[in-house]
Length: 226
Image (cartoon, rainbow, N blue to C red; front, side, top):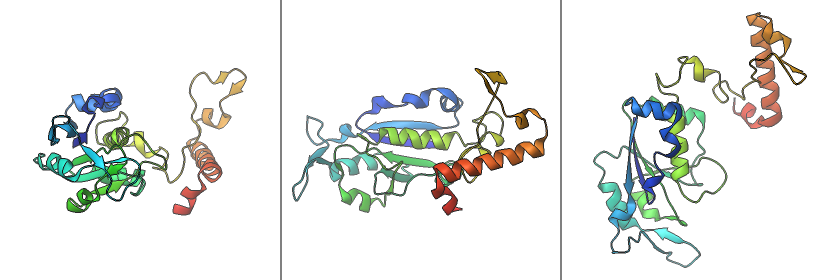
């Protein structure tokens, strides 16, 4: 899997993607990226990539001509994604779909300021995508979220095979059950006896019950989506 990242802050990459299992996967050649500086395509010596909005209003808009040249410089842009609150919200199903494309290439457009010229979205049939109902300073953090979530579900990235991801929140149709490890007693708090019983059927039933109760309490919307 390869990601082209269009940004005015290429130094923000790989960032957190350079560590942990995702960083090790990159070192093994399971995924790669190119951080492309949008300012390299500016039309003046100041590296300006934005201008005032037509029609007035607060905030600057990233220019279509600059962004168009930046996109055209990419030999194989693949699917182009722009991080925007107007897009559908990223979920685990979408992550699986992105990661399932063989030898996939994605171009991630990291906006800044008030946003990007609409003509870029229309010209390149760009997919808008949100990572949540809040506003960030730019798309770089969103790009790292998408890359991390996609890479970790790729084959041979996490230890434990497919089981490492199949029992996680959102993979099981709800939120994950409580997790425990050694010591079995800590500060007067004990691990539930069922988890120490060795009875796999009872353990599975307990986990299902806990998952259902937590999901109903904290994310009832996930139950409605089933």
